Amino acid sequence: MDDHRPAGPGDWPADLYAWTGGLALAAALTHPPLPAAAGTILLAAALHSLAAWPIQLYRRRYERASMSELRALVATVVIAGGLLTALAPVSRVIPLLGGAAALTAMVAIRWTRLARRPSRASEGVPVLIYGAGAAGHRLLRAMSRDPHCRYRPVGFLDDDPHKRRMRICGIPVLGGRGALRAAFAATGAEGVIFAVRNEDGSLLRTLRRDLSNISGYFLKVLPSLDASLDLDQVRDVQLADLLGRRQIETDLAAIGDYLTGRRVLVTGAGGSIGSELCRQLHRFAPAELMMLDRDESALHAVQLSIHGRALLDDPSLILADLRDAATIRRVFEDRRPEVVFHAAALKHLTLLERHPAEALQTNVLGTLNVLEAAAATGVRRLVNISTDKAAAPTSVLGYSKRITERLTAHHGFLNVRFGNVLGSRGSVVTAFRAQIAQGGPVTVTSPDVTRYFMTIPEAVELVIQAAAIGSGGEALVLDMGSPVRIADLARQLIGDAPVEIVFTGLRPGEKLHEELFAPGEADVRPLHPLISHVRVPPLDPPLARALRGDGAALVGAMADLCVVPAAPAIAAPALPDLETAARTS
Picture 1 (cartoon, rainbow, N blue to C red):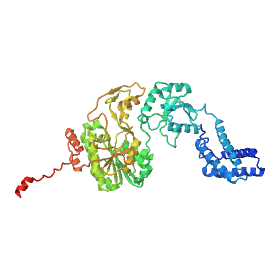
Picture 2 (picture 1 turned 180 degrees about the horizontal axis):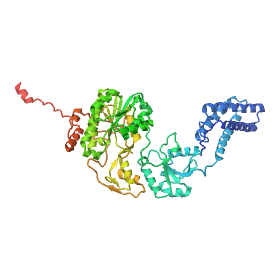
Picture 3 (picture 1 turned 90 degrees about the horizontal axis):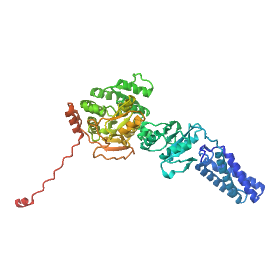
Picture 4 (picture 1 turned 180 degrees about the vertical axis):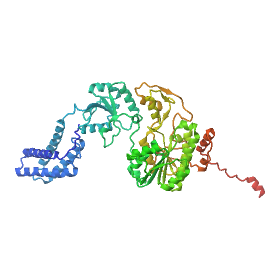
């Protein structure tokens, strides 16, 4: 067990006393001249101090009584002892015996202090830590270091049978998930803190279900388990935890060069993705951040979230409609953006099935207006925000977004494709919560339907990352983790509430399971472990401009533009008839 308080200058006098005692004991056994013995003790103090300086033994680098401090202590004593053997005016036996005795005393002093450290047995809320791996170790050390920690660890739980009956820093591993009741009874714990890294959410969901069968106990999570672990982050379980959305590690500072000092434009800036893009882009100090939307209230909200005020008199706010090609062209000519994130789109699948002409006007032709204005004014980098419904599309939404991917590729710009985001306006999570608040029922299309989910911040972070590493003509597909069964999502949100789930059946255009890759697209990740690169076949813009009408005819025409015609076969040249050639000759 270790103290975790850093070793500091206060340990230095005690170690010099240890040298004094050790050398005095060795001198008493060998009887050297008294002046020589006294000189050896003074020399040992000087050599130990010199050896400890480069090792930083007394500069608060090591946790007291830890293995790292023990190694540093042994190295210091060995170096000082070796030099003392060569320089001291006494028999070599004295430095060797004295050094061994001194080291033993130094270790004993540290462990004695540790044993006498005041116990926190009666302080803090007793808790079990679920996970006896590296994350659990780090959480325990953080609790030990913090004298004001509101939690007190009394036991570990871990499903690994090899960890049974282990003690980690004196705290026992009491068993796995099946030992919950016994562990609560044995320790008096009042709850569990979940400390398992890189889980897909299923284990946390199972643990929460098990705890719900044992009333009176809480479950907390610590989402961040990095070196700067902060116990204030311990919080209640959130939906993203249950879905297994891990903490992504993206070094945004290292890839922000294309944003800092640049003129950046975001379309759809008032939407869920667009507004989060604006908030994150603002951190990179662009020369100008232009926020374009046709919804004035949404622009007001995003400006308020970034600056804390929203007077609507800032030229960074641009009120415009993508469908107005002349206005969009004028915005690009006047403001000259260098980087564009195109997040504006209609996205409700069922509504667009009924109004395909709206999908054409906004998603297809509106995007084409942006692409053509960007190309005409020399935009250096444009990112079109796409959706997983564009991969092997079966709906109007999917057709319109696949067409925009192809148009973007034609203009040499970049697409980024991902699925549903948690908490966005109009998302299934928002709908479920509203239905639960009204007492139900919660409507789900099918008990087997699944979807991919991301949190809004992680989706935007990866979009910014993707824009730095992608090249024109590509679609970058963000890693969405494992698909989530929507019925399970509804049950997690309902919890213990008496709310019924009603299955309504799949609606026109809906898939049972979404796909991230179209047929023929391979999952290749050459530059980032969470971003796949696929090539997108370009589409000639006049074909999109030629789309007309509404209803089934328009839907069919849009679907046709999503299909890439096979390359025509090249006929082999006819071989000459050798017999005829011989006769004519």
